[in-house]
Length: 290
Image (cartoon, rainbow, N blue to C red; front, side):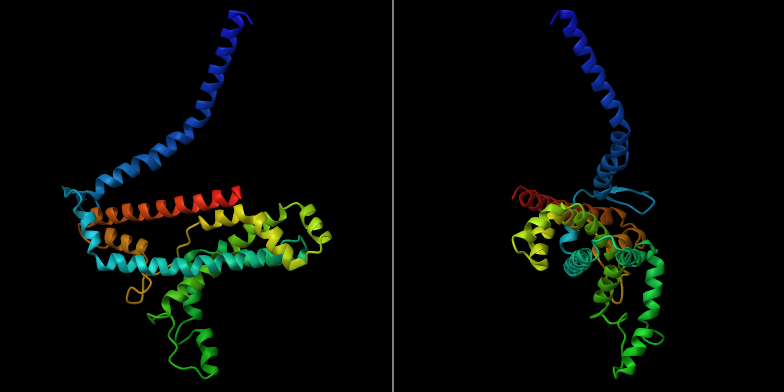
């Protein structure tokens, strides 16, 4: 190849490279504006003592982070968040996997059930909250009315500190299990039919196919769903359902001069989420390699 030809090829490669940068520039600019800059700004705010309007700022260094260590409500909120997550996510995934396996075939009946199960997803959180509050109300709720007919008395699920968190978990699962079901249905439908045919020839039954063909085939989508954070909480009663996010919100917008402290808690929450995400990605990649 002549020198002229080499220069021409290099010129073409540079133009392609510039074109590639041009295409990714909008996304890169959005990431910088809405992710990188706010992340840096939030760390700066976490070192300040200021109000919600960001006025009268006073530099306090890492005092806000030191305050977190002795904040009983912070650690109580962390415990509630862990309890909520430990109950909601496994049940969400189990229901999604079971229903997706039952509704994977594209029959008319299955399509109808998929639509029904997805209806709560598109309902607004306010509508869902009000609806279930009426259903579970201690005086006028139809559910509590049925329980009273069965002989139960003094039923107050919403205002009982022991049962409130489980009511929140139940409503959260009811609101969002349709997403898990639909995503996993799509994952099952992408599994080659030949794998089921081969396993059937080897004598595998439906249950064996589920554990040895379906579950391994949907693992990438399964891990994707685990990355989704589900939050649905009202913060009461007696703070028995006040998760960490709700506590941060209350501190930032309902307390005077605590925006810096709320931002410091947000930074700590970000660190928790980052650690969990890295662990989950590591497990996911190891599972995929196996």
